[in-house]
Amino acid sequence: MRGETGCCGPRREGSCAPPVVPPVVPPAAPPVAEPGKHLRNCVAVPGGVALLGTMRPMIEGDVEGPAIHKRVRDLWWEAGAISVGQFRRFVAATGHVTVAERLGWSFVFHSHVPGGVKGTLGVAGLEWWRRIDGADWAHPTGPEGEAPAEDLPVTHVAWQDARAFASWAGGRLPREVEWEHAARGGLGDVRFPWGDDEPGEEGEHRLNIWQGRFPSQDTGADGHTGPAPVMAFAPNGYGLHQMVGNVWEWTAEPFRVRSASSAGRRINAEARGRKLLKGGSFLCHRSYCYRYRIAARTGNTPDSTSGHTGFRVVYDAPPG
Image (cartoon, rainbow, N blue to C red):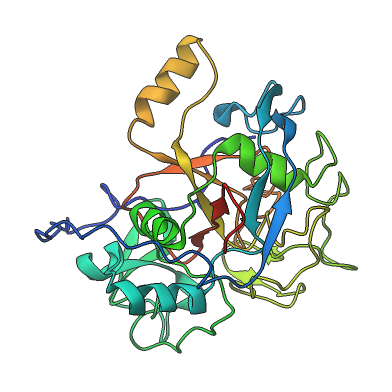
């Protein structure tokens, strides 16, 4: 299975022409922590010996295995990805301006662009991603589109934006081992938060991914052709919703592979500066992007933003 696929996320660097020169923006003041004021639902995830990776890797270039064990502590997690409503309260409290707002554009999936893509710029080789001026967290399909519902996951957020929110909330972004431990819900080396049963096109839907033929037809059999509300599907054994599918989630760590081989060194050199994302998104499908598994992983530059990337926050102590 190929390691490079088009749903995982376009990068700002070298992504489309003409090149965009970021404006000079003075560094923002550190946000003041306001723990507890933003919470929708927080759940406790017990610590212990956690599994990182898998003994059943599927994408060779991502180096998903072998599985190793690490110890993690008790943590408190947002039960869902951070929502538009939560992020709106953060912006109102701090005046935070996101990377997409400062640069004036973000990437929108082609079928979500109001009025079609004529006159827009695409990504070479990934033409379904379109640069849309004015697209940001409050305008996820661009200034001509509808405002997002408050319970949808916030998207078009860069790694820096996610970290700023987490700091304001009194939390942080999770490490990869913490994320996988939480996503497994106590089940061990399983592919999905509910076990190993593959999600199908019909029957019970346990996550929000692509159904149909990518990139032209999403049947929406799971009820969604874009991001779903953060609590839309049943939680895993720890009470966490949509740890796979829906939106990619930024983590605290750089994207690196655990390999000393020449191939591993090459991958790490090429990925220098990128941050790790977990979980896959509503654009994933097994036929071309089998990254909606717990052990799957990808990386992107910290200033990259798109309509399928969000984040989740973890706390080292119970929020007050």
